[in-house]
Amino acid sequence: MRSVRRTASPGEGDAMRFEADTEIDADVEQVWAVLVDVPRWPEWTASVSRAERGEPGPLAVGATARLTQPKLRPAVWRVTELTERQGFVWVSDTAGVRTTAEHRLVPLPDGRTRVELAVDQSGPLAGLIGRLCGGMLRRYVRMEADGLRRRSEQG
Image (cartoon, rainbow, N blue to C red; front, side, top):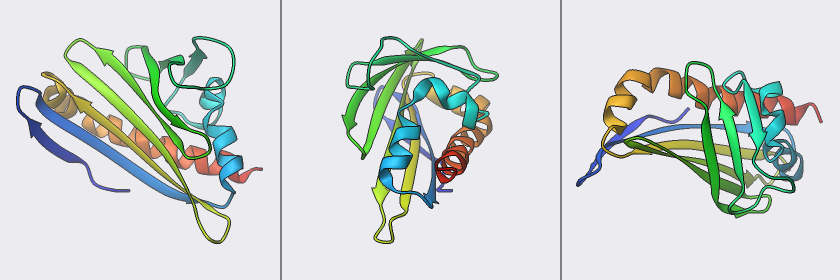
């Protein structure tokens, strides 16, 4: 797992970043199929107890999902970037905090896949939320990486 980083942005308060990565013994297509099947996330990561897509069809820029996570308020996420079989970024806004989650897939020469996950929080309350919930958020990002690896390797 990569480190947690705290940065300050003028007028933004503290910004917090939580990162995790893992290598998966599955090709990018398999990992991508698991990653973008958002409603099934609760089956493979304990960091999400319920996931509902806002609209039918494949995950795309502008698509939304409502995630319920233990000890957190449900949040609506909107996809802001998506490159097929390479990754996506989505954003959730709450009072005082913008959370951006990055999901990146990197094909490895041996046919495996490296997954890089990051959660950035910014805004006037980001530092406070990071101090109060940082340990939990760090665990959730790690749970997602590990769960994605396990599910993707099942084939």
